[in-house]
Amino acid sequence: MAKLVYGLNQSLDGFVDHLELRPSLALFRHFVEHVRDLAGIVYGRRVYEVMRYWDEDLADWTAEEHDFAAAWRSKPKWVVSRTLKSLGPNATLVEGDLETAIRGLKGQSVGEIDVAGPDLAGSLTNLGLIDEYRLYFHPTVLGRGKPFFSGPRPPLRFVASDRIGEDVIRLTYVPA
Image (cartoon, rainbow, N blue to C red; front, side, top):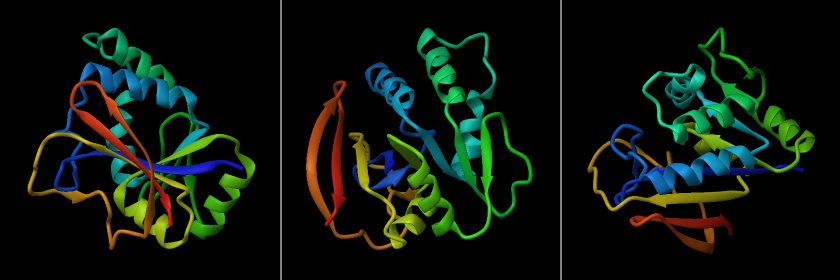
């Protein structure tokens, strides 16, 4: 059975912003390896639309960006949306009952499946489906934006911390 993991970069005050929190080279390399090891990724609509950036190579990309794009494209992606009608390559629209769909996905997969998107993660948390939370803290205060937790923070138990690069700390928690 797959493990569902929710992890995103965030500011010290708990906000996620893909434009403000640019990864260092060390953190970017970490994410390249992380994506390579995934069984797949479950997206909310907004984050999926941001990640579609990786669908096609750009001439000015670095070697690491090409590596990330190749890893990302190779992974199955499941997109939870009521409005999207078409998706990019290797992506499937999740329709019907969210709990049934995600439980089925966890049951038929092996390894880790990432969850991307605070609203989606909040829904999956409320359903008791998230197995692990990974909070990547950057030494920045944004003071605005989308919070990492879309609702009240669930009861969590600390299991690990890691320093990634020079300035990012990853805290790992499981449901208490």
